[in-house]
Length: 85
Image (cartoon, rainbow, N blue to C red):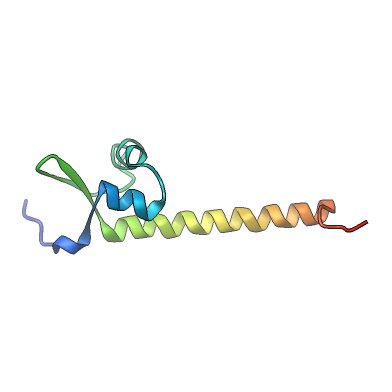
């Protein structure tokens, strides 16, 4: 199978880890091995993931984190955590 993607479309494990702010081991073991970042290609023993897939994963997890943060702030406010008494 021949890859028609340009070289800039693929990110190495280190690049993915830097973008997602996680360790390289987490990228290899949790994201690539469990097929979260599909497709993954191996060239000369190095693994690469598509940039679009990585960016989509990043945006999805940012939205989840922001939603959880807003929920937590609402719960704290309802509980009176911000009252000055």
